[in-house]
Length: 571
Image (cartoon, rainbow, N blue to C red; front, side):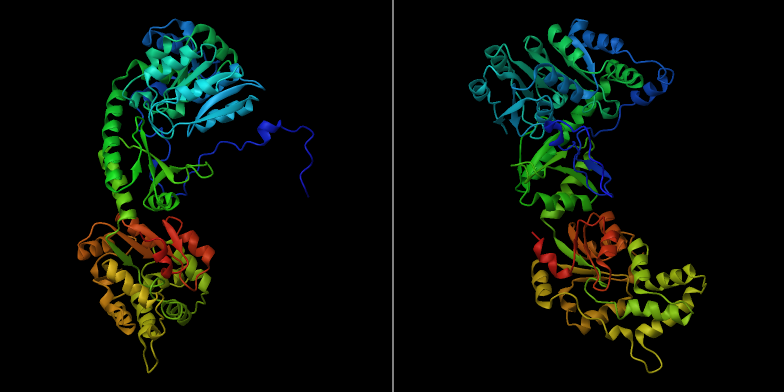
């Protein structure tokens, strides 16, 4: 049954705009560098929120926070407006002056919400290109007309990190005194020069600031606007009467009255920003000078870098669908040196791997008629019938690297308890061969093209990281004549099993390398690689349901249908 026809339709400028929803990566990210509110909350925040428990039954009042801000900036109270984050202030600024037939000048690339505010107000956008260098004042003046009601300047700019100079701001405001300049200074704490005092000398400039970035309090949703009393009165009338909750107001007052912590946080970020920029450029990447808490870098394949970093637990921001930005990523700067090191090492690992590591079963060896069949027949010997999907589901669930233990666990799931020694004895009899029967090990095709494997071995040192006993692993390699391609073979006897990273780390040590990619077909492979700082590449085993296999490999940087596809993504 189809949905009923709506009697009331949204106006076209609403119906044609998709809701703002930044692209966030899948689960498995533990270092979020795709949103610029990164940073640990200041200690004052928790204490402030505890004090706010008796304020939730009354409408909040902005007065005390506005008074504090007016004192901090030496302004009259009428020159300050508290808003629900900087976004609320910017939307009020646009709404106050923009209407159908009017135009707002914006730069591209720039903060994407500004265009939305203009379109939702019925206005239209005049777009200027600004990536770096001086803000395009001459072009803005030339393109302004009697219909131009506002010009937005974002400094540092999002997503480039470029800044507006005080001279450019003065010249634009004084040349176009009848146009409102919306000056977004969300990231100004990280910049070399604070334009707030310059802006407040100019009656047609209104400043927007926030506690979301440098103050690490994005969840409070507290921002504020500073400017000429007449303009601030317009903004006050253009929005809701109670924009910020009472607990947030209390927390914001406490934060602003104890500003020492934010200064040290900013210093750490600026220091790590220089290190990250230098590290990216040393890798031959184009990374723009930035005065924000992020850097903007260009990659040959930004989508692959996005996925690669996600596989290593790092989320960064891409801009799909935004013309001219498809090759660029915005990376928030962590304030901790160790996290900045992790970021740079992850980029290096992606772009310049020193070795390739391979799981054996399901990646190089088709075990659907050997190990997988041994599991089925072992279970059958104890009165339990297993299907291939049940085994695949258990593999996809993780912690199933040892097939003897997996078989025992599957038996237990069906209510059959057997000692591991007995399960192993039956399993090995089937796999190795017994009582004149051929062992299942003889029916294990090689899954990788031998010529491709030789070419990879000529470019990188290769290693096997498997849960097989050494004798089984070596026998397989010798059977297919590929043993000489591998400089190291790490097996069951060498230490704890995957998902423990120890086998992967042993392979790195054996190859005397620090950066590598690993190809595996189970969550255990992916988890072990990630924990070792090795780029995890998933491969779907030939007999597995691809949908189920991909679900188990969701934390991999990329999932390949076959190990032979690895050459398509190698640098």
